Image (cartoon, rainbow, N blue to C red; front, side, top):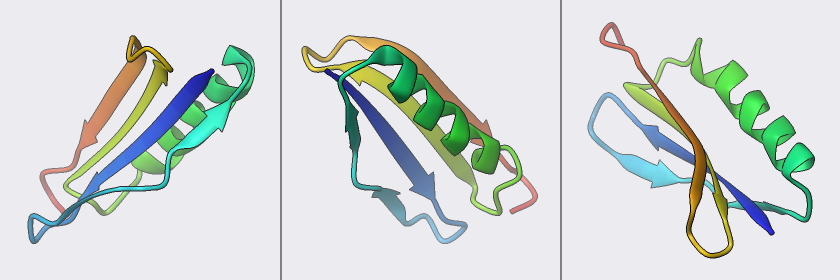
Length: 70
């Protein structure tokens, strides 16, 4: 199993983790990962992160966009 996490940080410092998305195949997990990143790159948030991990906790991909102008 593959889990996609989305982490958001607001300008006021509030951090939230959206409900994880769970997929049976890596291809489907990567599709969701890149959808999250497509929003993160233009986000108004201070930080917007996407991660793909396996059910044993191995991090396969992780990327964070930081927007200093937010």
